[in-house]
Amino acid sequence: MRHCGPEVEVEGIVSLKTGGCPEDRHFCSQSGLFASPVRAAWLDIPSLVKAAVETAATGATEFCIVAAVRGPDEKLMAQVEAAVKAIREAVDIQVACSLGMLTQEQVDRLTAIGVHRYNQNLETARSHFPAVVTTHTWEERWETLRMVRDAGMEVCCGGILGMGETLEQRAEFAAQLASLEPDEVPLNFLNPPAGHALRRPAGDGRERRPARDRDVPAGVAAHDPALRGRT
Image 1 (cartoon, helix red, strand yellow):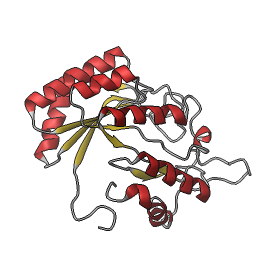
Image 2 (cartoon, one colour):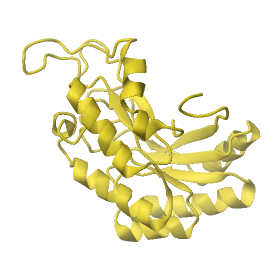
Image 3 (cartoon, one colour):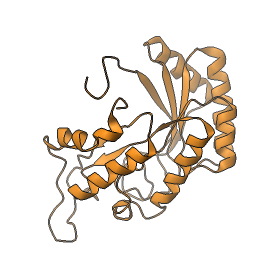
């Protein structure tokens, strides 16, 4: 209630392209660079429309199309454009996207077809990001979010706690999110199984442990300026 008020927005999410991502995000089972049971798979447009209709029937007001990619190529952009058009013809629901890092031309195309909101998580503090991802930079993500905001789309941006960051880096991350002024902040807590890349020994030789129960309220409190009314 304190952070979000008395209302809850219901949103449905469907993966257009699952698995086989070329990026090395150490927390993600969809990365093609790590051992994982997740295999690359695509949904066709009729399947996306069906999912959007089913989502709207639950009372949800937002339907988000996501893809496990670095950024959309022309094939993916064309499929998203066709899917958004078909969804709008079939059902009254807002459409959001999460397609990785964008160019200005891609931002303009998504805006032109009426995409309401764009998700691109910063994941963690700028200073900690190189310990989590090495195939692209924090700044590349930030630039996508800047273009999205400037184009008039709503911004959905959050991250994950429990990836080996310090308390100071959590505070840094909270300040960075607050400066972005996102419309929605997904805040997640990593619970890596034994052997996971982010549970192996850190530089000091100690095994990283999953986020503890007390980290949840502490994390929300630390991110209060960015989260107020947006989680």
